View 1 (cartoon, rainbow, N blue to C red):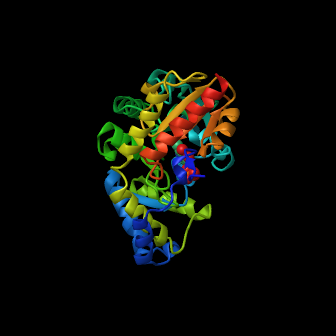
View 2: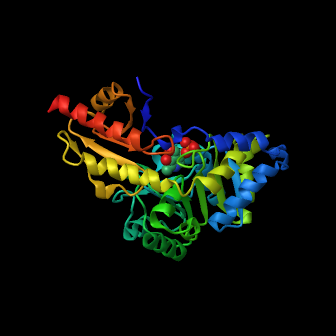
View 3: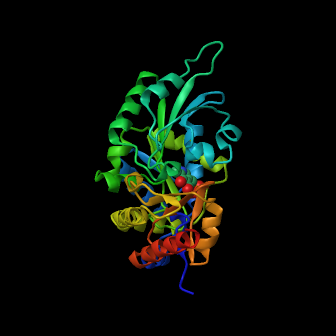
Length: 344
Ligand SMILES: Cc1ncc(COP(=O)(O)O)c(C=O)c1O
């Protein structure tokens, strides 16, 4: 049996040989006491790349998002958020449970909200109504299919946030995918936001970790929240060393993942029992809409050593990453065709 082609997520990537070497060589300290030099280096590099004052290394993208919400809001404030955003859909109610914020949701087209809909969702603080404090964005958009929120939209969101006195947080778990696909520095996306959290442990292949960036003042508050939630890590330089490799060596290659996702969608167009739209592949995800339940497809694909995930009952998500090369992509495409052939 050949090795599995694991398309469930880009989180499954294993550390690269260079990351193992960087871990072995990393200078370490106690980051809770503030003296791990490798964490400090990762944070400085992150702030510089994103064009912000400061950064804080956190264990996960979820924690990065939640401490950003905590640092931007007071209990009872309103957060405006796209209705299928990760912070809402996949963080087990943390905005309500941890941060006591109300959420007003806005529909979107594959993750791209209409600024007029956001404007309609803004609530002005009064004796009777809670006030909107935060606009939460996601780029690329996970449930949208790894879709890009265009720069012009980011600009429009910033402009309306300023008009209404809202802070803007970007869940940029995959913001480097957006930057590579758009061909712009990641700071061009981040400049429209007060804070950005991004993941090292997805397409950038580090084993663990995310970074939250923003102003010095915001990151000082975020550090308190990280400690409060138990996110302070001691010799975290071991992990930060991998993150430095992610940022210095793994960004450019994301384009290969994007090309493979597009190739899969293009080659599977017209496959019986499936509906696939290559134009909706913006980055490293290909979505296959299935006539039969997605679970039946996933069970059948497993027999061919291909693993994927179902974001909904009749949709399969295939995510491309550093551990899926051209040959693995061909195997996945052939497996989908073979399964389709059984049922046609
Ligand atoms: C858009 C988005 N935000 C946040 C996260 C959370 O990251 P983590 O799994 O590190 O908590 C993910 C993870 O898949 C994600 O896709």
